[in-house]
Image (cartoon, rainbow, N blue to C red; front, top):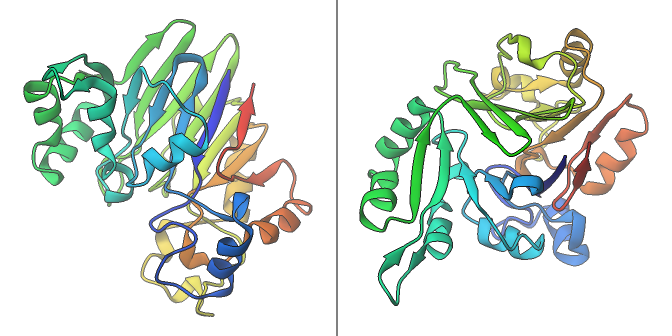
Length: 274
């Protein structure tokens, strides 16, 4: 199984065009892994993309993702849906006014949320442009890949966690709204958990403390992630959805990884092979 982190960032890309902080300035200078685009994952084996942040077209170009046969969106939030127009160049011939729909796999309740928040966008793409074909489900099998879509519903709403399995290998993609991490037997003995919204030291870019922030209850600490890792016997953790407002650079996370046991931090273009 081959996975690729198309984008490892969060709400705002790094560098944020309106920010002059050291992390953003460093990213402008060094580029490469110091830059972060919006959160998304690509399953290379079946050409499937999960999530469409606004900059997903740029991410696909940078990561040499040239073919998408299947698409899914984890939840309704703008940093995961506002690049949904990618389905137009994928499945719609504007010259001939003809659609060749790609498969859109989504939890039924998430599909409803996306339509409610995005002006019936999925209906438009399926029924007017005919560039997607929606499969509302919590399970799909594509070739040798099994895909379980689990609703980690919290106070913030419906959120899809993806359990991706192939020939005894298992990956979990839990990118956003991860806390609380609602129990599911499917999570045991995964080879890798790719998880978002994990605070390293609790200090944000402006020097304030996470414990004083209004979103403090939505994020895990590293100690809590270790507890999840041990409870579910997960071999490896990869932290993604690394937000600009955390104020940490790629080099910072490289150094931090040295003190951690099979926990690392994602970067754009990161390849994971199981």
